[in-house]
Length: 52
Image (cartoon, rainbow, N blue to C red):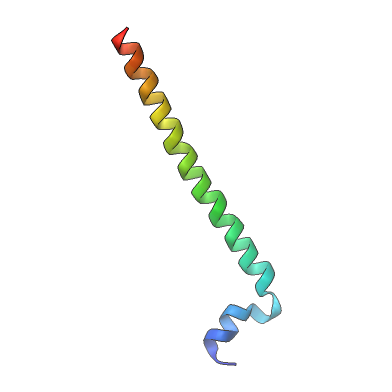
């Protein structure tokens, strides 16, 4: 195997390692998206309160 194949194979633990990386990436992206949604909602609420 060449070096790149060995890297992606991860010494036989590729499924575990890449699954863990994938789950971590999904959680991180989810946290960012959730924070943006919450910020927009709070901003809208503040703007509505200022109009009242």
